Image (cartoon, rainbow, N blue to C red):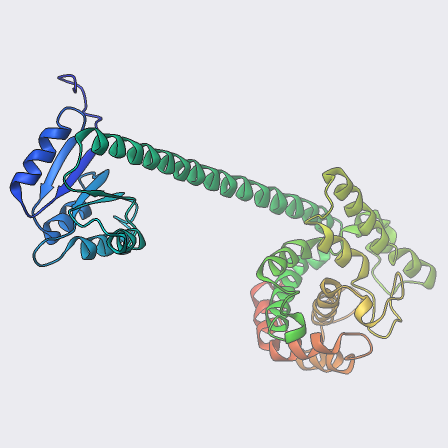
Amino acid sequence: MPVPGQADRRSTVLVVDDAPENIAAMAAMLKGDYRTRAATGGDAALEIARSDSRVDLILLDVVMPGMDGYEVCRELKQDPKTADIPVIFLTAKGNMEDEQRGFELGAVDYITKPFSPPIVKARLKTHLQLKGVRDFLADKSALLENEVQRRTREVRLVQDVTMLAMGSLAETRDNETGNHIRRTQRYVEALALRMKELPRFRQLLTPETIDLLVKSAPLHDIGKVGIPDRILLKPGALLPEEFAIMKTHTIIGRDAILAAERQLDASTSFLRHARETACFHHEKWDGSGYPSGLSGEQIPVSARLMAVADVYDALTSKRVYKEAFSREKAVSIIRAGSGTHFDPDAVSAFLDVEDRFHSISKEYADEGRSTP
């Protein structure tokens, strides 16, 4: 019995029967152990079950005028709000076909009339306990899912902050390029989104991979932190021996990111794309690039995308040793480099989204720079 002044924590049983005397008998049987609600027809039963008032279990008569118990059960199980409520059929029908039909509709038990009060109570207790276990597991599953999502957000935040911090470090060494990092990041995104529409890139350039490519793009020149100022900031063309030193920024960048990866102690790292881009974005499709002389498909896709993005930005940007090329000139040079400097598919994608490149160039223009 509930204690006066305290919340009634008893389970609520909905008794559905077209005969009021049967409802009264069942309510008297359950009195003290359960809270009961009653309905004398299918429509009323559905209305109560779908209301905001809690129903923990339904005792449902099969033979009723209008909507019979089977149809009520079918409606209950099709509604997400009531599908989890256990249904026990109460009926005078005792043949196997009737029971099978009830179970196929989603009932948890089948009690034939006349029924024994101890048997009814025992079965109610069992099914309410089972429902309690299911509800507990569902709550735990939801909590675990929320925790997984929270930790995933934290991991992604760490990834973003890590790559942003490392990219900002690279940018401080070469302030003449200004928004170069942000432009190349958006160029890579535009190229990747276009190339993923090609069948051979569809499985490779997944949304998750593109997200990592975009986030890691700012690290492509991180190795420049190891290049002496006299070379990195030289206001003019580099001598051959100076250019040889400049080319080492690819190896310096690769090794710096590799050292960070080793600290993660994981078989795969979110920094893999950053490492590949930093090391190989100066490789060329025909094998004449550096540092490893890779060619064709040997060059990681991340580096192939960055090669187009980096060269376009270099061509359309003003430097102390050169003026910015026109948009038309830059497009012409990249088109001419298809199959020699650049992956032909990357060039094709570039030509498809060149308007987007031009918009990015204007949006992230360096201060005082007029977009060609």
